Image (cartoon, rainbow, N blue to C red; front, side, top):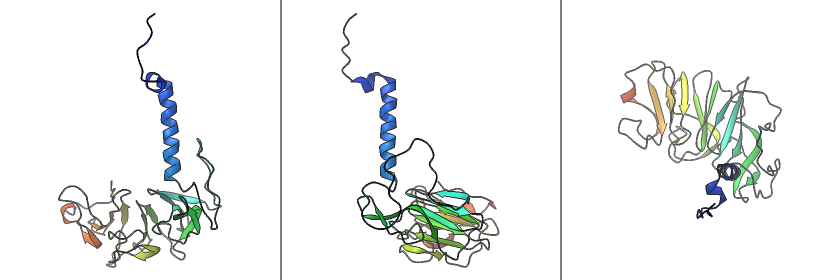
Length: 230
């Protein structure tokens, strides 16, 4: 048998090693994306010491009916309509003050769910890239977190750690947010979409950038009942 001239190393030659390295890389990325590692002072639960390969229980006694997943934070909704969020709170996307510090002590965060917007109850909840929005049973939209691109819909371009009501007095039947662009849209009673935030990054027929809801005319020839934003 001739000696092999393949100098790529074991990871490149053997599928098993590639799978091991891929799993290790995924674990490292998960650790960076989570709210752990290097936490400084402040109150709150201790950061997880390592990733786990199986589902772990969320540190709360609350029972949840639905969940919204953002980019660096998550939110859940109870059957009574209470919103609870955890993860990064760099821009107030948890809807409450988070005293714990993560990512080398530079970013506010919470490892356990915090009540968002005490006194507000929602029928649906949506977590976006760095902000969150909820829709009440009466059809009013409220948002909190990152707002420099108009993501909160209240006419300002500023962050808010407390939920603010989306401007215009709209009554929406459904709400959708994009987990990557920060765009949000609500469906009016006639099925027309009204959108706010930074708009679409590509194309010319998407919603325009706006800090308050604007009717998306190009999509209003159809009466929509549900909307999903990528």
